[in-house]
Length: 216
Image (cartoon, rainbow, N blue to C red; front, side, top):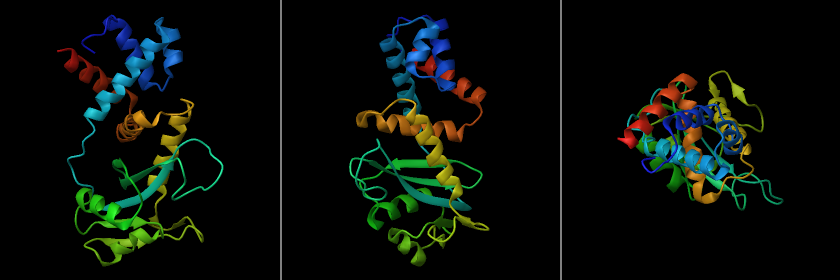
């Protein structure tokens, strides 16, 4: 940001359009800058969001856990273990924040350390019936699971919140006609940030402040 030759007026307009969910191509046209300039600026905004994305507080109370797979539409295997897709694990405190992390696989040895690191002991954890969550049955958490082959919700027993986040994130990313794997972590944390700070005015205020802090 310090090296940017854009006026603060144009930077402010780009930040507004980023918050509004515009693509770099649309923003470039509206602000009258080169498309590559707008694209680079948007990528710097995602990097700033990523740099401020650390979750220090533990999730507690009722927490939903689930994994999802991001990537282009490909023929062949779908769902868990789908080839060419990026596996992501998410934890969501009901009526609260979501936390996401890219994972190498969805095995117990991968998921349980993340849950123990991010969820307060004795919290209620809701999951589907994926076998990697079996370890929660004999853990320091209360565990409830929903069998999606039979129903999607049974009163309080559901993971609708985290699945709603996955849908929002994928819908946002589809606008960009494919997200490069090298930058996927930035787009993921952008979606997390948008969900956790749902008021656009708050998003705009945060981003403006973070950019000004970078400018010194």
